[in-house]
Amino acid sequence: MADFLPDYEMEDQIQSNWLNLDKNGTYRFRMMGIMGDEHLFIDGWEAWEEVVNIDGDVKRIPHRRKYVRGEKAPKELTELDRGGNPKYFWMFVVIHEGVPKILEIRQKTIRGAILEYSRDEDYGDPRGYDITITRSGHMKDTKYLVTPKPPSPATQEMLDAVADAKIDLQAIWEGGQPFGALEGAVNDQENMARLNKDDLPADPNAVLTRIMNKQNQ
Image (cartoon, rainbow, N blue to C red; front, side, top):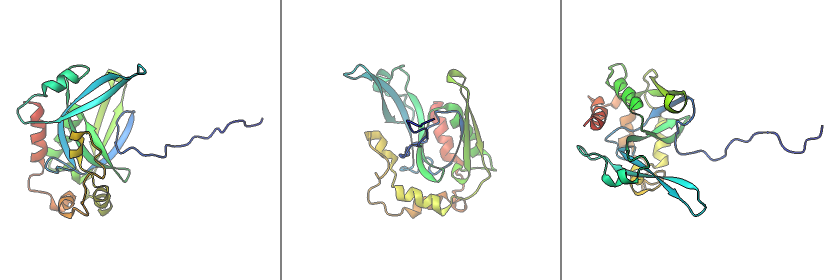
């Protein structure tokens, strides 16, 4: 039988800068930033606005604002959000399959699990070990299983990859592109060295504990 059309599949040639947990499966990554790493970790409120374009198609647009201690989500976000309920989120840089990416966590169950492991003396600072998130189920039955891997220092390749990407998550607040936003950054060795488990602070869990306490206020 003659072949009239190609039947082979081609993978996408452009990789996303975001690690999306939108399909069932297991995702393994290394956190490269926690609260205090202002370029590699942010937290705040997120609202999704639905806008109808000239073709009648509905487009969802995210609006984000910084978290302010002791304050609820800004009224403007509540009014913009399609459900009137802005979500608190963490956003941080990770290494996924050897590549720097941005991961946003809105699910309280995932944040809580990461926090619990950070409090465990066998694990501590989440930059010191890989984490896997396994997604299963569908819609309201979706579940996430968070599992830490044995602790190990961040490799030099990880540190170099993040430094070379010049990521600045502060650009998110202005609707900008974080990758390459850290203009003039050549090699932030002082900051990146903190990722090495040998150089972790005396109480690395305190910063994540303060983050989790925010959503309970």
